[in-house]
Image (cartoon, rainbow, N blue to C red; front, side, top):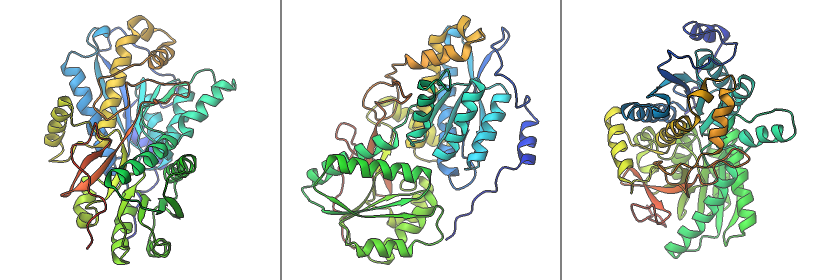
Length: 431
């Protein structure tokens, strides 16, 4: 089935959205004495092909803001409440850029978003030009932060405003190769032939590049016998699956988008690929509630290396998951929702450490950046390798992934051991 892409955000559409706020051009608003809220521009795809994960991000952010506000707001700022200015990228880079401009024009003093790497990269230019700190809650392409860090090092820009609490494409690859090896070893099996298949967009290119590089560096016992891209969104994947079948794989390693997963998995079954398992190096489309409803048996036993999955061994994560379920008509608190939830917690922690005087000054954005650099936050809900910290590139080296598997039509953490809530099934049952 062909994907339906939302129309591009036209100038008329943008002007209509912006009419309710301040002019798009101009500097971020200073913190006035009478201001009772701190505005955060929260921009995700809530229409278009990535609407389901984007809406999960938005609800996760709102839950966290509500929790901060209910607990008394930002205490060092006299209990100032967090206000979310919501934006919709329409799942397009142009949409990300225009919505970032819009919410900044309406008074957003920090940006957060945006899920897909293309839209996020477009928002980076807004953050740098407008001196608005930008916390990337979800987006994996290494260049998103690395390019800005390089421009500052080279003297082309003075300050890096962009920081990320999310695994990069290269770290995704390293963790995926590691988890593949550990799961195969724990299962006491030795797959030899792995076929990598991926969506040929910025995200898929970054993820596949990281996986291939990590495989080459680690030299595991299994071989990447074929690498097969497809145009994203695809109209048909029969040729790509036939090519994969011809490679005689033991494991299919897909990097998908939601729409492409809806074509890929049924086609794998249709062409009767007999493999030990389908194990994703890391991508959406393999665990969301909407996907489970549509793909059902096609997703059972599929594994996926996902970022920032909730650590349900923490009581607080379980509590937030229950609140999320109530406010989402029964949906699971997943990697998308928790990434944005933790993002708001990071921003609240940063604001606690900035102080009123610094925040009110002309160089308030730089004060926020300085506080970001000094972050060391342990109280987050996601599976992580340590506290949230930011390195010289602007990335969190402790941002981690978890291997989830669809078991009984539900995604559960099965690896690493210290976060696993259920034993994995590998190889998957025949038939």
